Image 1: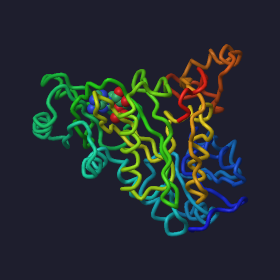
Image 2: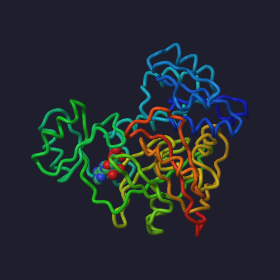
Image 3: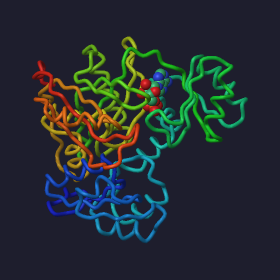
Image 4: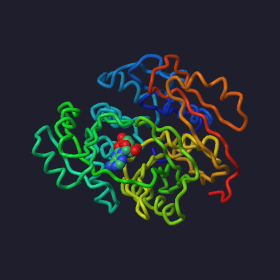
Length: 362
Ligand code: AMP
């Protein structure tokens, strides 16, 4: 498919969490139908989509029927098994492409890719269950360092900090036999992220970088604009553009960066819409969800002009108790994901507070 999707055509989304839910609402606004594929029952995106398949990623028949019912497939999380993608790709285009998924599914592949295309990252080295590899890796990264599982880590899970050699054995045990990567600890000034998009016509559009604060390994707030120099801001756009072009990417990407002096080090890339881009709903002329749908549907991208300074705060677990109070505030955009069970650490929604009109309108 190189022609743009027409209204009434169907977008398939792998994964039915809150990102899938917000993507499906954006798709509906543009006149598309959405078919969500999700293994668990009653997912947040089920309520906002025209069709829902509830089946595991190992169910070849269900995957084939899903692929045949849609015109393009996208995803809301990066850990879709390769075997499922093989079945889908034989029927219908997957956007962003599989290279983007392969790179971001494995932290070692990701860091190697990033340094190969000339970008700066924390020093890193591979670690296996063999303790000798950890000692070798420590010689590369120095101390302190962070040991992370190569695959399936998120929100700070599957990570162990190593302050000195005495922590090494415990850190290796925490990996539970999984292959890992050791990263040197970056004493960053701040964490920022760029949400950027690339269209089928190679056009690139970047949202203003946001400044992120994490609590207990989970994103807490994103403040936009980030307090960075114009030089770093331009560098951040350059980093995003380099990654998008190198991957021949189509869709929205989230690029997490450590800012340190006049350096930007890439921490992680997410080949999808990203929690730190939720502010765009309230602070920019187009949100990341519509931009992603436009890109994968072959529509032109919108120049993502920011009109307001904003702070996005995640509503996590029992923060839900404060929702009635938040709902009474003026100048806020409240977004809940329709999850009924509240658990500690579970993302239940977010609120974006408009602080003031943007001075520079980037
Ligand atoms: P990650 O899951 O890799 O995004 O890591 C979660 C959080 O841990 C990041 O947002 C940082 O706050 C912190 N972190 C991860 N890697 C490093 C590093 N190499 N140096 C310093 N802080 C890090």
